[in-house]
Image 1 (tube, rainbow, N blue to C red):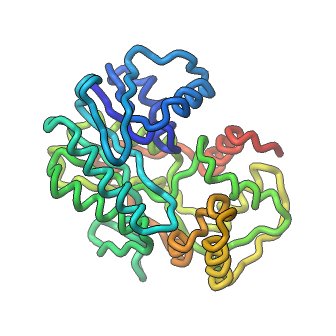
Image 2: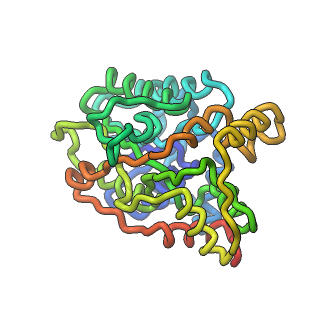
Image 3: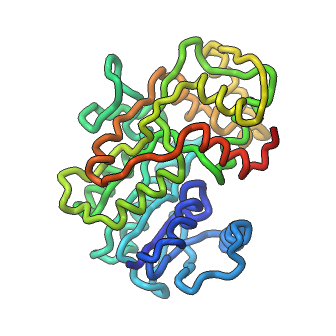
Length: 330
């Protein structure tokens, strides 16, 4: 089977590439990349100094993707996307138009597995335990709106050869976005948005990669549904995430609960000062909208049943692996 993988230098895509390289099912792996140097550097960091013979690189981005000089893919796994931006149009340009560009470049018989997000559906509706596919989709951010628009556009053009996975919060090694979490956990005063405890679904990146590859090698076209939430069975809270991270680094401190309005003020300040755009990107004026709801819990049982997959990683184990990758010392 020939696999095409986008986003191979990003968080999930980088982890997924390492899993796919160990899988004998894939006789060829095609990587559309914008920055070949970055990819080679990341592979070297993983101990891969020479490109494997079955790894094929081609230049591509959200505007163009030429597959003329590489093996024809049987399946494409689309992990690339824009996660943080200060402008709504940027999300739609990359997440919607870029995905359609990829679809148009693929052979007509190539299946497409797309990594979306729970953000496309929105937080858990009031008075229910977990969000399911039957609930009305209500994205709270531009990012979520762009992911939902991506899904709808791809289904319109790709039909049954498309399958969408919607993971919740993803944690694990090779995610530089967790640096602020570890920095906060090591401090004596830790900030938690909101006075009430918030509940979240989550998934370890290794578990997600296993789920993606199991799906890729299955015959999903026979299934009645082609979109799934995929998540750990373990629901966590914002307090447990902060405390477990602190335990991993051996830190002791106090968690301070801040009113939402204060978080929104920080977001406005971060949006106005260019030097704060990158370090506080998760508190940008768009993504801060997703911090306010009390419950982001999704039901992943359908995926587990239909694909015979079960999560394996605990939150503690996942954060310990993340700390080792970040080289955070106790």
